[in-house]
Image (cartoon, rainbow, N blue to C red; front, side, top):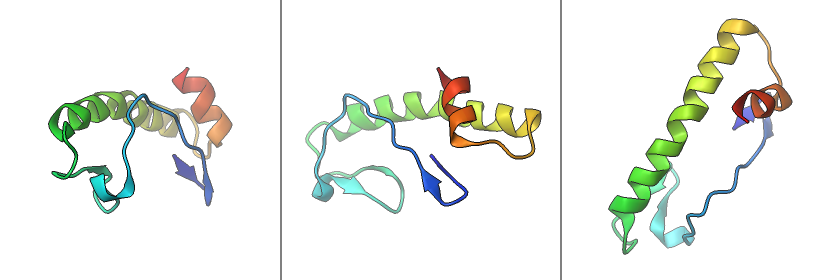
Length: 73
């Protein structure tokens, strides 16, 4: 999550190396052995974050990364 040039990373149980990750699309590529399963898991975990982001935008015009983190958990 990036807000006002500050970034916060969230750890997932998915591990990969740079050759197996497509930075432009933010997804696994075909070089990863289980990329379909990993991509499915990643999409399911992105949904709550995206919903959280939209909810916070409706509540507050300007929210911080801490607000995002508190609302997500």
